[in-house]
Length: 487
Ligand code: NAP
Image (cartoon, rainbow, N blue to C red; front, top):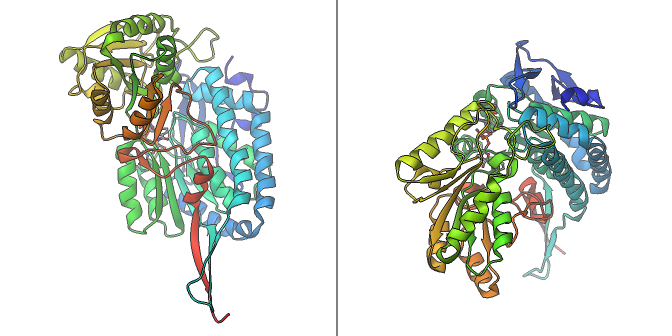
C-alpha cells in the first residue's frame, strides 16, 4: 500500500486553494513533501508567501458577507455535504495521511473519522446558537444579547493530526458564518489540500475555506496575525510558537485561541485494575508513536505496585513492531523527521547522564533515522529534561509515589496543563484527585478521552479556549447587547 493506491486521485493536490481557485506560488517556487518512513518525495507543492496570504484574507472577508446572512440550517446543509464526502473518501484520506505523516494506516483512518465528526457536530450545533432576553431593571426597556460571527478567522495547524486539527477549527468557524484562512504545517500539506478539494466538491462557496501552503511560516504568520481584517486567530502547535503568536495578535487585539503543548501525567494508584492501567498507559503513551499533545509524558505509579506495573508494562512495550505505517504488522510508525528522533535521543541521554535506567529501547533504530525504538525509562526525577519537556516520541518514563498528595504535587509540577489521567477504583479519590490536578482534561480509568462532543483544551501554558462540544462555537462568536428603549 502507498500513495499510488488512491482511488480518487483528484484528492492529491499540489497547489494552494484560495478564493475557490487552485493557485501556484507568485514566485513559482515549490517544495517537496517527504514520506517520513522512507525519505521518498511524495509530491512537490507550491510554496506560497505573504502576498498570496494577504489576498486570501481579502477573499475571505468578501466571501463571508453573504455566507453569514444565510440561516444556520442553510450553512448546515452545505457542511453536511462536506462531512459526507470526507467519510466517503475516508480510505483515500487515510492513505494520504500515512504517506506524509507516517502514522499507522488504521490510526490515519481513525483520525479522518474523528476529523469528520467535527464537521457533522458543528453543522448541527450552529443551529443552537441562542441569545438571551435579560430581565429588565426599568419598565420601559428590554435588553437582549445576540451572538454573531466574529469575522475572518486565521488558523495555523500542526503536522501530528493533519486532518482533525483543521476541521476542529474550520467547522465551527464556517458553521456560525465566518470564513477561514488556514496555513497547515509544511510537513503535511496534502491532507489539508485534500480537505479543500472536498470542500469545493461539497459546494462550500469560494473564499470561505482557503488553504495557503508555504514554508515561510514566520512571514505568513505575521500576515495572519497582523492583518486587521482577521478578527480571530486560532493556533494548534508548540507553546513557544503559541506565545509568540499571541504577542503578534496583540497589536490588532485579535481574539486568540491556543491549543499548545502538554506534559500529561498518568497516575496509577495501588487500588487500580492493574491490567487496565497498564493497557491504558500504553495507549496513552504510544499512540501516533508518542506524537500527540495528550500523550502520557510521565507515568506516576504508587510504590506498592511499582515493580509489578513496570514488569507488565515493559513486557508489552517489547511486543511493539516498528515500521512503515502502511505495513499491516506495524504498530509504531516513524517519527516526523530525523530532527525529532535526535531531540528525543538528547532527552534520553540527559536522563541517563543524571542516573536514569533504560529498561528497553533507548536508541534511534537501525530501520532508519526517523525511527525511534519503543523505550521504557525508570530511576527518574523532576530535574531531568525528560520529566519537564514534551517528549513527543515513543519513550515512556515511569516515576514512583507513596501518597495521594505526593502524586498530585508531582502531577502539577509543570507549566503545562492539558490532559491528565488517573487509574483508581476509589470514587472518593476520583473526585479529590480530579479536582486537585491542574489540567483542562482528566481521564479517569480511560485514556481515549477525545471526541467531537467534549470540550478539548488546556490551562496554564497549554493554552486557552476549547475545541469541540457546545463550547467550541464560542471562540467564533461575538456577543452583541441590544437595548430597546421607550417601550
Ligand atoms: P510548531 O512547531 O509550533 O508548528 C505548528 C505550526 O506553526 C506549523 O504550521 C508551523 O509551520 C507553524 N509555525 C511555526 N513557526 C511559526 C511562526 N513563527 N509563525 C507562524 N506559524 C509558525 O508545532 P509542531 O511541532 O508542528 O506540533 C507539535 C506541537 O503541537 C506539540 O507541542 C503539541 O503538543 C502541539 N499540539 C497541541 C494540540 C492541542 O490540542 N493542544 C494538538 C496537537 C498538537 P511550519 O510547519 O511551516 O513550520
